Image (cartoon, rainbow, N blue to C red; front, side, top):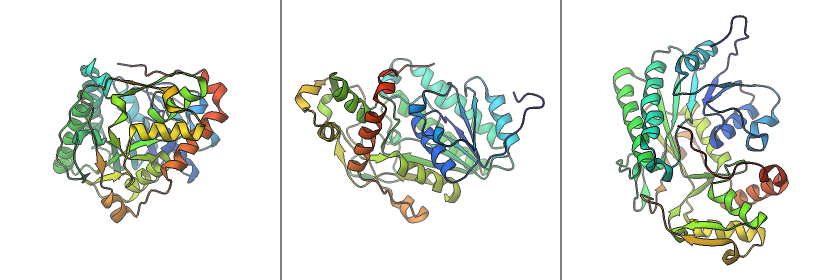
Length: 336
């Protein structure tokens, strides 16, 4: 709750899930543009090494609120700020772990998220709600996946995200809810969680640990720098057409093994000394390759940073902050 006498911040953007990797970089992008931003996440802000927006001394205010428990307070923050743009990165986001407690994924990604949408649709000042979705809703596909591809989710995580997306479409059709969707390829960059493949490969090489590579790393993805995704998200928020899905991806397709090889090559490390091949996880999609034509055509968006530039960016961040990074949690910690 906003306490009596507490200063109310008016902001054009509210970012839910501002502590996430993508959310924190989007906040950083907005602050660089001179925007006033309110951030909401259920966890306290992590170490500054994971928060690029800390380089901006002004323009951001953080509220620690949980979508599952603090919906009234979240709406109070948004209403007080009169924010025309709400961008939601919040979700239970791990694919493999969603098999262990699927009910947790459905609680956050479906029940609580739909409750949020039902409250947001009544706000007269809301111009655009950007729902950060995922290509996982498409399942394993052949060829380029267009924005109107049918859903074929293959994990509890993917099913939960698809359910929220489908619910949003009913809200748009019945209430005119101004939702815009983004689905990005595999996002990476400095400040990413240490259990993700690019920083994990770099850290293992730097500290002399073994990297387990699921299934030999044969699945194919498109990797895109978080800075390009932040720009695409901003354009979707300010220019996107309600009901439209915007894919944010590069045209380059690369296997997970090739990703690891590139990271280790940048560090001068030997693949066979760092990597151990282990069994693949259940339900992992062999490939999802996104067609970003709509974002390019309607938003004028183009990815600017190459994969190699991104790898150098991550390696540089890790080398510069290695002492602090060594002290940070490396494994995913599940929060119901």
